[in-house]
Structure formats: C-alpha cells, structure tokens
Amino acid sequence: MTILVTGATGSVGRLVVDELLAAGKAVRALTVDPDRAKLPQEAEVVVGSLAKPETLPLKGIDAVYLAPMARTVRRFCELAADAGVERVIALSGSSVGDGHEASSGNAYAVVEAEVEKAGFAWTFLRPGSFMDNTLDWAGMVRAGEVRLAYGGSTQTPIDLGDIAAVAARVLTTGGHVGATHVLSGPEAISLRGQVEILAAVLGKDIRFHELTPDEQRAQWLGFGLPEQVADWLLTGFAATTRHPQVPTGVVEDLLGRPGTTYAEWAGKRRAHFA
Image (tube, rainbow, N blue to C red):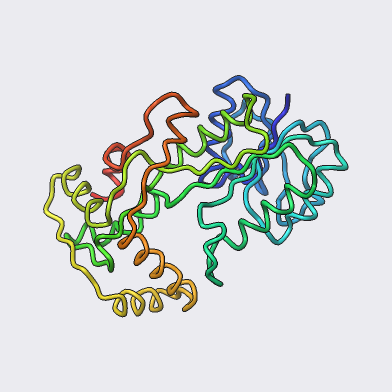
C-alpha cells in the first residue's frame, strides 16, 4: 500500500509523513522543492503541487492524505479517479457549515463535496482551533502582556501532532470509510486560561489585557486582515464566550491515548515564547 501525502511540507502534512513512516508504510511525499523540503530519506519524495493537479504522481497510489485546496479539488478528484485511487482522507475543519460568508468552512465544504461526489472511500477530519495559532502571541508574551478581545472565549484547541496521528491511524486501519471525525483537544480552555498556562510554563508574569471587540478588529485590520475575516473571527469568539466548546473525545477514542494538553504543547515551545 502506497500513500500519497499532499502538502508534505505543510504544518500537518509533514507530521503525517513521520507518522506513516513510523508505522512502516510506503509514503510518497509531495513537494515543490525536494532540496529545501528536507523530508525523511525513507519517504519517496516527488515533485508536484495540488495547485497544479496535472503534476501529481498518482500512478500506483492506493490512498491519499489530501490537504485542503478548494480551487483545484475537482481536477484532483478527476485525475485521482482515473489513476485508480480508492481512498482519500481529507483535512477539513470544524467551521464547515457555520454560515458566515468569510468562514474557512466554505472552502472546506467544497473539498468535502467534491471528494464525496467522486466516489472515493472517504474520511473527513474536522479539527477545531489549533494550539499553534497562539504562537502568534509570542511578541506579547515576551513583553509580559497579551492583549485580546473575548478573554472568556472557551475553545478546545488541538495539537497538530494529534491531527497527524489521527490521519495516519485512519489511513492505516479499517472502519473509517464515510466517517466525519470532528477533532478537538482534550480540554476546554479560555483565551485567558491559555495565557495563565503560558505564564506558569514560562515561569513569568504575563498580564491579560482585554480589548473591546472594536479594538481587536482595528488591530487585526492594521495587520492586513480582511474586514470580513476579522468579523468572522470576532463572531466566533463571541459565540464561544456565550457557548463554550466541549471536547469531542474523538482523538482519545481513535488513538487510545490522551490528547495533548495545552500545557504539554506549551512546554515543548518554551524557546519560541521565551
């Protein structure tokens, strides 16, 4: 069984490569620049890009880990079906169906619809917010004050490594065809709570300064974020303040081990924040 990992140098795809190799599977890792990719020697490193589906080396592939790219997913599906690919595990997101015009879920929904319509044996992985999103706080953490709106917004952030481990498990075991796995971290934690954990892990005083939604929006627009995206993010933070998220438990069920906590994740990234 040979598995094609698209986005093999991406934040999740790179980890999927490692997980599959550790499981002893034959991996064909897709990258646009093999020399810079520094992928493991055990993988069959191939040149190609989902942005240009005709470049994909699909011959002899049994299953695909599909990074989300709505713009070209239909053509990918056509080529993969013609090449005899049977199994597709697509990375999606828990934002599918939230209805906001700027939602990332709109593009994920396109990917899911095209993969399902093409007739593959499919599985969709829908993680929520990533713990890695808080790497963007590093400058504020170093300065000793994190400034954000909706400090009480309570989500269930997930470690990228757990997403990759689930993807590898689904690719290499039975019983997942036609399943949509909604993935979360093991704990519900507020933005303010994440800052408190960072302070404890780093052993330093970090204040939380709550911005108003308007102040947060202005900050994001100053960073170049499109207005509609800023509004979508604020809508999400407001919603999870009123209705805190609850862990789904799917990671634990599929992997047979606890999911990575935010404190564990932060402990491995002290150098980034210090």
